[in-house]
Image (cartoon, rainbow, N blue to C red):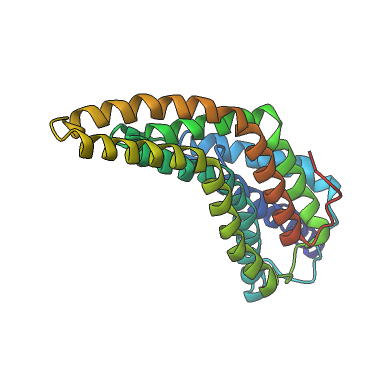
Length: 265
């Protein structure tokens, strides 16, 4: 009976802790972890990936008991690692949602807002459009497979146990927010400059001809030209998306202590 009990505990340890890391990443992952996908589907997805990954990862040490204080710390640690890896994928969409909100405010399209099913909040239509475009491109380049492969490699670089993410890595994560804002502003800078020139021109026209109704005329002009600027800036979407995707994968490799050689795609 003691042999049977030890074998059962070893089996539970070798499955539960990898499952916690993988399911935490799936729950926090871009699109897959959103409210659009039912919890039951995410759970089945996590179970299937865990079953496929277990034969490929280093064996989990049996020195730490599952039902102990150290076992509880290891479980929490796996959740933190998986959630951190999954949360990094959200930077891809949030960057363009932020850029879309800036464009919407500048072009007068901000009055049109709908409920975002991914974030569960009301966002401008422009931001929602960029979010849907990100989702299509993300699955089109097999981004979900890239991140699932990275979480599989994380079991080699950060084995299951009392191995924590280093404090310097958390500092790197916080500094990455500046990169996200930089890419968002770079993507929206064309709309910002164009609308600044348009508003300045309308101000000069109003000054030269005070009888013009700047509110009725200016709103229509800003709306039409804003849609045109938005259409013209879509040509650079893929370049910014690839740049941001590479930044996120490099950051994920830094968290994992894994050496990424070029693009992981």
